[in-house]
Image 1: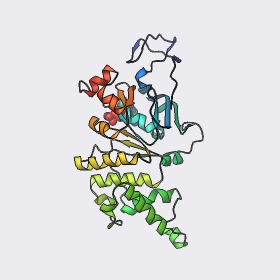
Image 2 (image 1 turned 30 degrees about the vertical axis):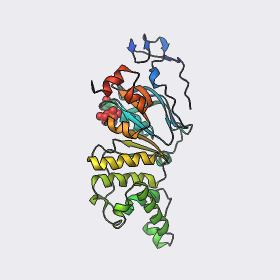
Image 3 (image 1 turned 90 degrees about the vertical axis):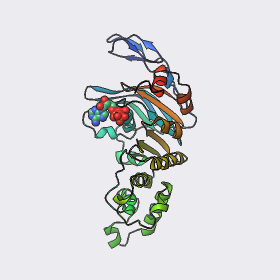
Image 4 (image 1 turned 60 degrees about the vertical axis):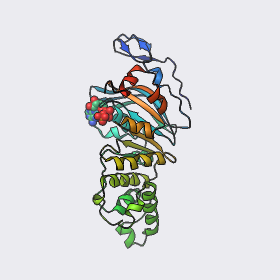
Length: 309
Ligand SMILES: Nc1ncnc2c1ncn2[C@@H]1O[C@H](COP(=O)(O)OP(=O)(O)OP(=O)(O)O)[C@@H](O)[C@H]1O
């Protein structure tokens, strides 16, 4: 996998900028060298699942993400770390166009999923979000039974028929539904804990169980990529450890991208780590071991050693 990052030229209106990799002088309207830090030119092992090129996000006048380019390899865990407000969640939401839902948000640049730009006209957002699922910080199961939490998505997408109409018309597929529920809960390491109470309300589960249920719900629609925004930050250490084990396990089959504030967690679970710093800039992207043991950027070293952030 490779991304060519020559000294492309862009128009800019900023004054002098200092980045980690390159110092560039820019004058309003002048054509100048691209300011992308060289330490983001990371060539991961494996096939590229998501390729992000020159991604910029504005919320009104606020420039939340600045010219971010990176490639995310398939079947691996990519961690996004950085101080509060640096744009991690914004970046994550760009990967399945969740920012489209935010009024005033403007996204420029390209995001390719298996080589297809997800921002081009005519992309089916429902289909995209099936392929690129999302798990949020606070577990948010539906106030329904454990079983229904899993079957709701596939039923809505027409992948299985289980509703009242299907039952009345004899089209119901109870066996397929049961298999899907069991398979999804097993894959999310929850089956053993809930298989004798599938009709119970999901809100009666512990926080950690609810989060694994949300992961099972995401898996039930057959995603290829799973985006996780601080999936364990609301959980106790034991529940957190189960989620971390699950993340590592899921990477055998899925491409996982996880935002975390917890640097130890990023170091434990991820294969590669992207460090964003204040101002919405991707400062360094590399193998997780390299980022934590020997980062190239002084700013990343300072952040990781707790000097700021
Ligand atoms: N819906 C929104 N409307 C307006 N501005 C937003 C919105 N979401 C994020 N922002 C702004 O964009 C910038 C980046 O926010 P974002 O939530 O992506 O950062 P973050 O690194 O994920 O932060 P945290 O770690 O605190 O969750 C911030 O200045 C934030 O205020």
